[in-house]
Image 1 (cartoon, helix red, strand yellow):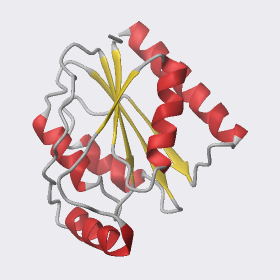
Image 2 (cartoon, helix red, strand yellow; image 1 turned 180 degrees about the vertical axis):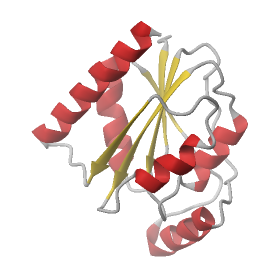
Image 3 (tube, helix red, strand yellow; image 1 turned 90 degrees about the horizontal axis):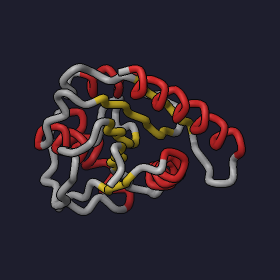
Length: 161
């Protein structure tokens, strides 16, 4: 078991792809946050955005092994400048106190500033590092370089702390 866990929520697969690349670079374990509510298609997105605007957590059906970890990285898409309900539910269920927490987001152009500000409020001790990725594509060498630089930064922080 790795000291690093990446947990992610992905509705369309973009965040999953980034989480998998990052897990490979960091030799980290990876776990998907799954929820009971189906959010496929346009209506799934609309209801998800509404739930995000209302700060409504989802019912998550997945279990996660955060306890023995030193570093937890949370991956998510941006929904109405906020974390998706499944991520909100994950952060409400699992105590990250005493761990280094980092987060990345994927988006189509709105950026992650609002999302990270709202996520920080849900994480004891805040976020040590964040990364916002606009329209990530699996075959993009720029994405690979961004993830390499960020993973080096994260590892340096963990080794210092």
